[in-house]
Image (tube, rainbow, N blue to C red; front, side, top):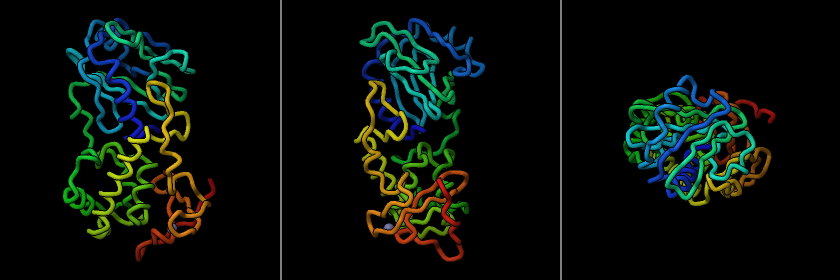
Length: 276
Ligand SMILES: [Zn+2]
């Protein structure tokens, strides 16, 4: 699933071609993309000018004159300027006054969605991991009891973190993923805040991670997957200590960590490693 760095990369490739253009028409081959908003979207978008494209967590927000279109890429959604790159085109925005003729929404697995919203606050998401201060982060972490891994994935806690970057940040901060959030020592919480920033900013600089078929709006793959230290590396040696990376399931999500660099805290028993 595209996480914060992938969505940020998509937004950065969309903005130069979309801002200032006018939506001439909307077409769709799969009404599920608009989930009950099809008529509303087909009537509202034509004639609207695109003022701004920005990211809000894992959402792409397109500011219109007037209106706000929210696009969530779901598991496999891609926005592509070149329709010949699409294999499962579900919808298209046809554009005027733009260097791009159209923007195609390609989504093999059908989890992506388009929606008109009033305001980003309607999405009720937590703060951006790149904006929250170290002290606010520590305070919020210490107010919760669940496993730190699950908490970081909770979009109402922080918006934009996903499975890859959570595993990578916990590894860098040397925190076991099952540690209750309230038991993360303050110095480790500060290390985790710093690790999240480092991992996210480096991934953005690398154009995100292409572990399945993720590409940006120009059809380019990301390069950060080659920098993963734990995610997707079960059984391989830890880059820091050489121990085998383990994979367990936390809150139904595959979770990768090094047992030696991220030891289980007292009272937390690490489950048996599970097969892929
Ligand atoms: Zn290690």
